[in-house]
Image 1 (cartoon, rainbow, N blue to C red):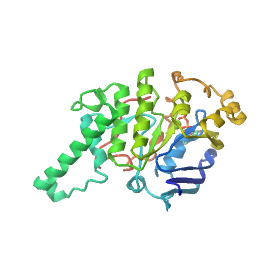
Image 2: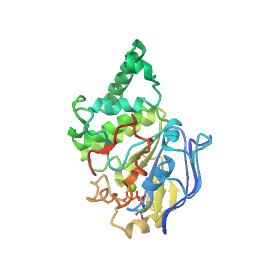
Image 3: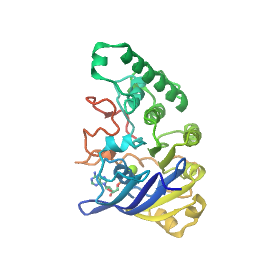
Image 4: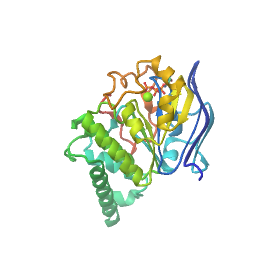
Length: 302
Ligand SMILES: Nc1ncnc2c1ncn2[C@@H]1O[C@H](COP(=O)(O)OP(=O)(O)OP(=O)(O)O)[C@@H](O)[C@H]1O
Ligand SMILES: [Mg+2]
């Protein structure tokens, strides 16, 4: 079976820093693959290359056999790749529902004249967008009010909304960057179940996660990065026993064998870098954005 996602010898350098230094892995349809590694290992950078937010220094990324290495985020998204961010990114002032409706704009075509004149066709597509948004908010199990601003939601609920928006784009491949960060134990168990339900829809998932209990439980395969280099790719069991993996984690504060324990504090908070835009890459990109003209902003920092 040919791969849905193929990453081949990916390199990304920031000046002298080799953020990603020879990463290769494949993801097949409806597969759950985790990417783990200590802080700064290059996990988010790899996601940013796959989604077109960063331009790889060398190597190749293909989706369904199409080379997407040099494509813009919007073009990668159009090929069925959706993501969530390490630090939740929602349009904080917009209603929850509208945040998710924004995801449908990738496939729900609207014509400017219809919108200006509020034609029946425009009203129909608006209704489709609203129905879709409710459907995905139901799917992720959002309990909170959908009409209020996204920033008013508790953090765990914001994470659900972000996943709902990603799903509203109808992806083939969903990239989740530390979705369990900041969640309590009960929310993590719900996330585990949600990830499986997403996979059951036929969507492949790549999961960056520090919570080893979640990783070991949900993944079919685990790819391990350390200082940008891939040090293991195998079953959760094989990776857990791999001496190179144990060594990488023993040299850091991360816990490779921790049960579903809570994530160490501060794990996700060190992403802001001067001169960089966190995990989002160049600002103004339209990859994950939704309606153009809106300023995407963080409503919560992990
Ligand atoms: N925009 C950037 N400019 C300069 N250096 C960067 C940039 N983005 C990432 N880096 C560097 O690349 C390396 C990998 O960072 P990355 O954020 O990909 O790690 P990570 O594995 O996601 O870590 P964490 O688990 O803490 O989120 C780090 O040394 C980081 O400082
Ligand atoms: Mg990261």
